[in-house]
Image (cartoon, rainbow, N blue to C red; front, side):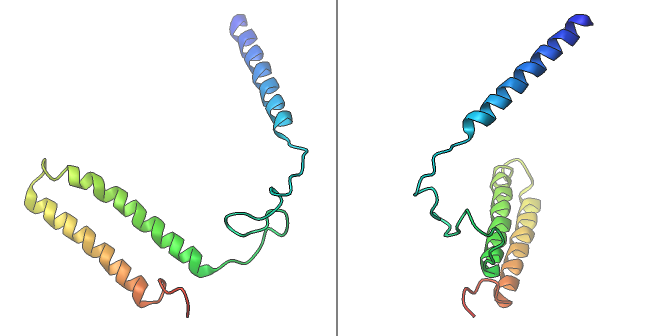
Length: 117
């Protein structure tokens, strides 16, 4: 029991030292002009963090994520086609695709896919 306590204390000290060294060494004191400029997204990283952004862009992102997850669901379904009853598989897959298409039509009809209004 004493050995385990000693080992735990040694491991705790080692991890604390490593985390402290990593924290100290990761700080960069050199200010680079290129690193101070906004890149890729256009937001300036060193000023106000609460900049308004386009709600349309956010909605398109959410729609993309939803359809991306659904594609991740569809791909394994194709693999199960051979090992399941074809009639049941077709009904299930058709219902799934119809739900996707109804959701897409709903978003399109209400203007969620329009960039400019």
